[in-house]
Amino acid sequence: MKEISPIASTLIQIDNTFMKQIPIDEIYLFKCTCCGDCCTGNMDININVYDLYKIARFLKLKNSRELFDNGLIRLVQIQNRCWTPQIVFRTSPFKFCPWLINDLGDDDVLRGFCSLHPEHKPLICKMAPAGRVVDFDNNQISYMMTAPTENCPGMDSTFENRLSVLKTELKKELDFEYRFYQILDKLEDKDISQSLMQLEYYCFDVNLEFETILCSLEKKSEIL
Ligand code: SF4
Ligand code: SF4
Image (cartoon, rainbow, N blue to C red; front, side):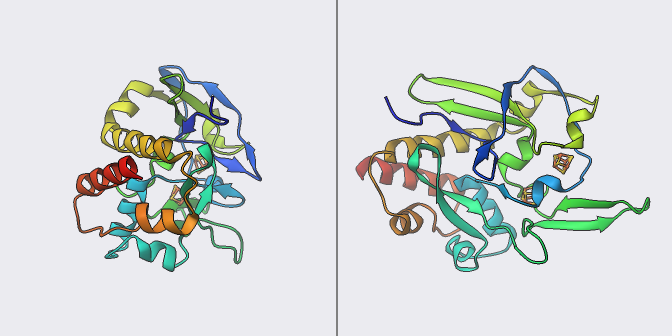
């Protein structure tokens, strides 16, 4: 039995403490107020390989390697001890995601917007507060609800969302992420160094179709 088996879309980590997750119902109540709290502070936003591709294309980069070179993304060893990409928050004048834009509304209330929204936004941010946990050992996929932050005002909303609609709308990205998790699962016991993982799995030409890139990563994981 592997030590940590499930891989989750939305394990948002604050100060190394995983937020509490509860099983999600088909209808769940939530509406983001754009308070910006989950895009600031000690949030760890772990993203997948398709998110890397989307963000690099948004920034009109040639190769996803530039995201690492420019200090926007780093690799962290978390779920299943595999190296996965994480957004590097800026630290001055406070901690915030480099893609957060603060803007004063007509009501003089400061709101936080995501410059990657909607097309290039990471899946974890698109899905929140819903999240998927993939457990390859037990061949199980479950969807959970995790408050984006402890005091997220969106969790007090009476706005109804449907999990089935979310899954349908994000099907392509969820499928890409599942295949990425399969790659990580295969690499789990290979003890690959951070630098090798970055070079071989997270640096690619973003002018290629993503399907081509993912297929090549899948083949690589078969022979390693
Ligand atoms: S903390 Fe909640 S309400 Fe605030 S921006 Fe994040 S999801 Fe939206
Ligand atoms: S990518 Fe967008 S939604 Fe996600 S943390 Fe950054 S600003 Fe917030």
